[in-house]
Length: 149
Length: 250
Image (cartoon, rainbow over all chains, first blue to last red; front, side, top):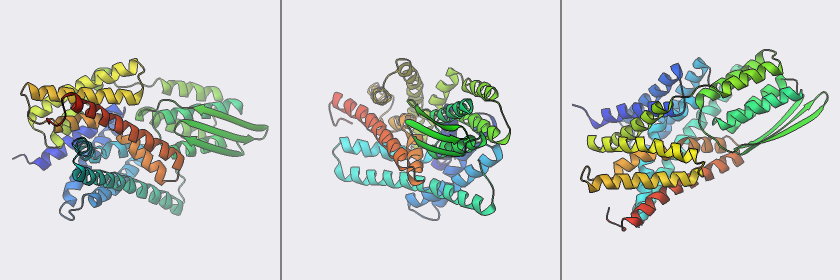
């Protein structure tokens, strides 16, 4: 039986792969970027067992994926952005952004506000996770005395 | 030093064009300039302009570069980054740097048909992802393929980016609506969402928030405004579509 979750994980992976190609990522980096898309949604679903709150799950996934990106970036000697932007694609709140705008044009004010706030929460949770890891990595490198370029 | 400085500016400019964050470019510029012999480097970058001044033993040099179009080309960014590291690690002549730089600038991209396939895959994937059915995914894939051609033509015509998103969004909405009219599908939401993922300034917004939260406030704000305007253009295309089909029929 193919569940909705399995479809989401697989299509999330395919989506990341597609975007990786769109951004001209090649070779091993392409594989690592697409794999990031696979684990990001898997983690998001698994965290559903721990907490219901989507922004919190977004934040945790974002932190974990950023850590993954930092590690892959060091291994493959490439900017971290490569893996962050592609791996987090499935978490970009495209769906809730669409419903926000759809509600606005249907003059459904309360749904518009709910969806709008939800979209902003998700986007901020995502960005905060990335920034937290970037800041932490910088601190870690300074602490370990590694010059990073 | 003048030639070296020019090379460093070229590299920094190209990094920005390929979609690097401001912080990364500022960092690379400082490292490169000091490796090339600058005593002091002052870098100021916002997404549309970069200003760099270096103090050297024989005087002060300043250059400004205006950056117009920003895209995302990770392969080029990767190689530019590698070049900037190389400059810091080994002594290179200005000619060598220029030769490397030109080679990177012409580095290969995926052929057009692969890009079309990637659009098709992305549109289909996200329609399924957000809960669409098989037939909806197929319709979405067709629209996604058409979208790539639309983007191609609007690039060729050097259409204003925001206006181009508006047109794309309008076409997507109409195509999805047409598919419901001929009875292929019953619900347009998932098809539009699948294709909107292709238009949404996801990278722009992520980079914007990163710039903003890491302290490059001006660059971050500019990028946020750009992302919001793009999102509004997409919404406007959808809105025009709803007006044209006569309001609340969907």
